[in-house]
Image (cartoon, rainbow, N blue to C red):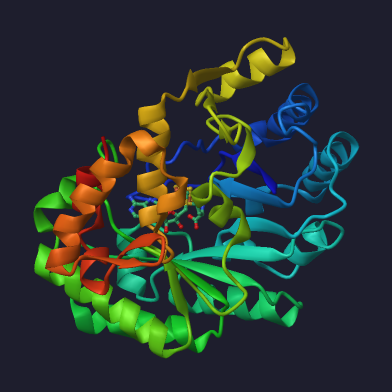
Length: 367
Ligand SMILES: C[S@@+](CC[C@H](N)C(=O)[O-])C[C@H]1O[C@@H](n2cnc3c(N)ncnc32)[C@H](O)[C@@H]1O
Ligand code: SF4
């Protein structure tokens, strides 16, 4: 398995909570596409056998790309990689981009999964988030995608907004379930420095409310037939995100575009410049546009803990380097006694009570 991530750092307006790398300079989108195509050519040897199984367009707002941009990118990918066994090709979409003409743009592409950023079904919350859509538009967007034949749709929700009440969150969960989507990602709001939302952090919900919101989400989705397969991710049977699952399973991936990260599946990571002009200039000169780090044994062990403890399978003890085994078992035994971690065969995983305090446990198991 190997994956390709393509970062599309353009948004028509910035949401009040988001600090992902993106710009509103939409006029740069065509030249950026050309730069990404050049990067594909320059980095075609990054994936050892050139065989790719998943592609993920993330943003920013990749649903803003034009038909011509999609055609150029796929054309270049097909010429430089073996795409004969593509299993999942995801496009992150903003609901207001899913209009009737949207499907013409992607008809000729292998995109077979949409991830729609809905965030909330409450109009007042959407205004606070500075989203471009309202709740009705969000529902219509998903229904349009379903009508046009997409049967692998994910939606993003957020919770833990300033002073959010459980009653309102439950309404959002109900609306989400009524859409019959195959996958739901739900993220607790984090107050990022430099965002407008940061100034509202004094109104943040307390930990007890956060836990109540999370438990309600988990129980409602599990009751509706979803599998809680990663802390923030829920899927109907057979619809886990293959691409994101590869991140958690240490599969190699190449990240293309400004700010994108790559991992060689073994001992090194690269990250591209998070600056549109510098990235494009460097790609055109075939210069250096990424930084790189080599992972020590400690790094590899810590990453294994961070990634696998977030998944429902947990840590496979067989994958732990012998030199860290004692430490891992000793630390995890403390939590097993408290009922926060549990052991099953070769695996150590979070119990239901542990999921919400996972950050602390992960820290304690790390070196
Ligand atoms: C980078 S965004 C891209 C998706 C798409 N542009 C959109 O806005 O719908 C991916 C997801 O991260 C989540 N997200 C972004 N900032 C967040 C924050 N500060 N706290 C929690 N979740 C956040 C949102 O749910 C969002 O849909
Ligand atoms: S949440 Fe999505 S649309 Fe909003 S600023 Fe971030 S990337 Fe752009």
